[in-house]
Length: 219
Image 1 (cartoon, one colour):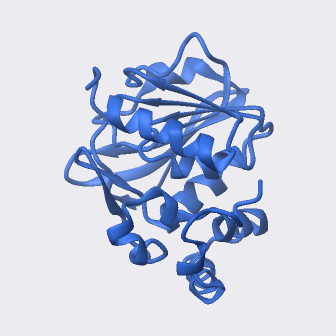
Image 2 (tube, helix red, strand yellow):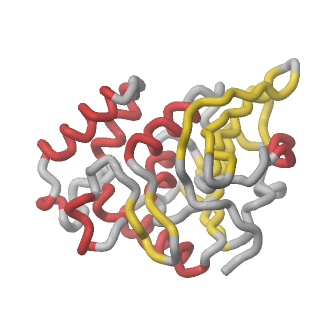
């Protein structure tokens, strides 16, 4: 996809993006294609214009409705983990938010299924992705706390909100070899990954993170 004609591109110099990529490398992101895509996807297009000058800083930013866009490192890290799955056909994202992580995933997976519980954010994300020409996504306004049983099985399930406990019910929605990448916890949160191996699910504890909570229902 070509993002060169996105409004506001002139505000984000090549040097600004290059600094972000250098920072990602220093933070341990090594996948060359992830680094390329992180430099190409216009993060400033996913936040309010008033804070767009902060779009390439290493921080989460508010997107309204009490939600945030994840910092670039977390988006790159979770994407890198997702690409370790053996196939890149279908990915399920729980928590569309502004659609930034959705757009990054769409550069690597044939189809991105994404669920957002907040109707206003779901509508904005759908319009934004259409305007950017991101057409291989299936966005849904709904309760993603139990995954998407009628859409699976998936190569990857990614949660962009912290579950209070490990969402074990979603493991059944993974393909063999598939991965579920998710934050878990309350005040203290941890990024984890469950891989569905021939011997059964194998869980890895990765690093401390901070996400908004995963909530049931819709708004």
